[in-house]
Image 1 (cartoon, rainbow, N blue to C red):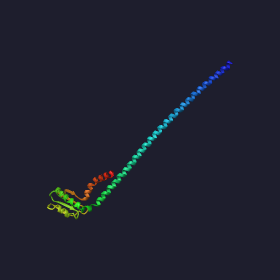
Image 2 (cartoon, one colour):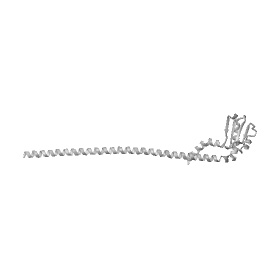
Image 3 (cartoon, rainbow, N blue to C red):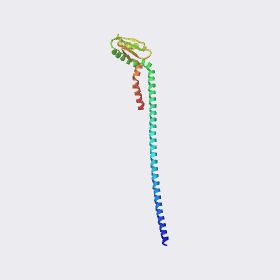
Length: 193
């Protein structure tokens, strides 16, 4: 019996050792699985974070691009509106040139222009129909000659100093000079509305 006890004892110890090895192996497998799952989860989070970051960057870029396109469209529309307003104003110049407000301001402007040009003999080229008002404004100033020869504009152009000094008092020139200020005012009004 002692041999069978020894055999049983050896078998029992072998089984215990086998069970410990198996439990240790199972624990190692479980740890490896947990580590692998954690690594996979960490990698998944990293990939998702990178994708989300890429998607956000792409979305920000797309939003910025669309904003730029929208702003460009708004600015182009405003420029077209300003152009239409200026064209409409230009179409009203012939009517304004015969109006009482313009005639009243013309007298002061002609006098100031004559003073600016001095007494060296200036010539005022004006649109037909304004020569009478200009003569009236310059009554008593014999150094200025008046010629109603301005056919392509409304108002007057005065030349003095032997041709060296030119004062463009046409409504078209005034409109050109005022165009930037008008554009700013129109844009400010659009923004206020």
